[in-house]
Length: 186
Image 1 (cartoon, rainbow, N blue to C red):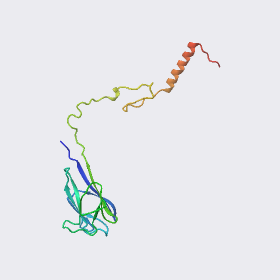
Image 2: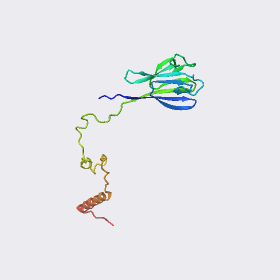
Image 3: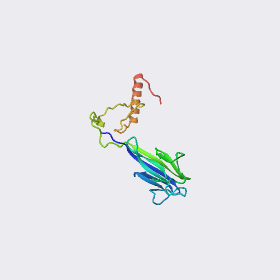
Image 4: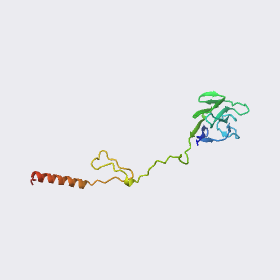
């Protein structure tokens, strides 16, 4: 069963009150300075009913938003809209579009989509998996090859007995000396 990607529509708004974010989920939003607007912008450069956001179906099966200058009755704003530095009357918003309403008043639109994680693995995914006990795993290292030492993560590192190695070297030296008849002078 194919999973539909989930979308989240987000506005990062900057105005005289500072920065804030708003998640869009309603079909229509009024934008402006009026107290009755769904998205209220704090600036004298913004009209009372400056713009409208309308949810529109997208070709990928989800939806996006269209911004329209003014209200749905056709009344335009005094200063208009700039979308990505171009004056427009209507625009289908794309990810990271920047809409400017006036000096220091703007928002950036984000359409975030992701494929939801499946809750269970597809059929047959784990049919050929063999579980291995870490204690019986292949020991692919020796104490002689310290340069390419690979230690399995499931086991603690081996502690090498340096005193034992030195003792073995000393015994080899003493045996060598005895075989050759070499004596040490005091």
